[in-house]
Length: 242
Ligand SMILES: NC(=O)c1ccc[n+]([C@@H]2O[C@H](COP(=O)([O-])OP(=O)(O)OC[C@H]3O[C@@H](n4cnc5c(N)ncnc54)[C@H](OP(=O)(O)O)[C@@H]3O)[C@@H](O)[C@H]2O)c1
Image (tube, rainbow, N blue to C red; front, side):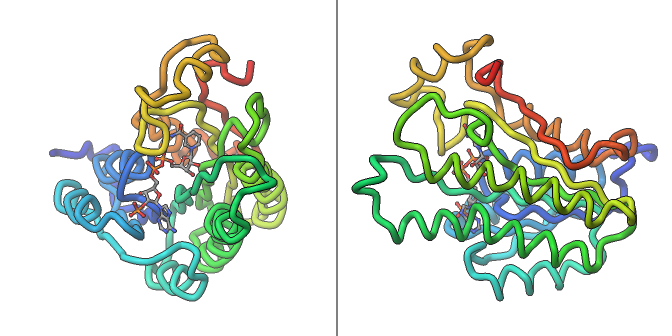
């Protein structure tokens, strides 16, 4: 694939935590197609990660985002970053009275502790004007279903994280934003899954979004015209939260 000489991402350094499948893989592919040097981490999906690395020319790094030492080491190894995206996320659903507390703690490790520590570490060596983006969820704003408390809590936490870090890093021109998808067709939430009708009933545009649509929004937030957008939540949910 040829990349336009005018691509703002040509030669830029991008890192995606959790990039082997779904929305993360679409983000990796989008930045790689725009000429960036892209690294991404993955935990369980080695075959998918290696195939994506080969097809996009990106670099796959094996490691669990819940392992803080490994996560921070992989951020440090990336060197000076222009764009840092934390996409990895776990979903645990069920009655909070019976949900396994260890599973909830792991969800918090991956969905909340990981982004906090990784964003701080990325900012240490990020170029001025760099971009930090968390993949949250419309459930950070709105929860019309029972059984998703821990997940919703973790995505609401990203909002406070982005608002705070936007202030902390704003003097360096670094922006910090959250992209909040609604139902998006991935392994986590397949467009033919059991809850589809209930989800579509909540939507103005009654279809699952695509990972590529989410990746386009991420790429816009990382682009030069978005330099004044920070500390903000960007919902792409087919009107689920309207
Ligand atoms: N799909 C939706 O409807 C939807 C809606 C709102 C928000 N989101 C959010 O969007 C993000 C991506 O979701 P998705 O639908 O693409 O999910 P997915 O299909 O389950 O893919 C999750 C990705 O995150 C990686 N990952 C998970 N745990 C990890 C860990 N401990 N360490 C490193 N990587 C890890 C996975 O890699 P491995 O397989 O290699 O472990 C995979 O690449 C999540 O934060 C999710 O909460 C999704």
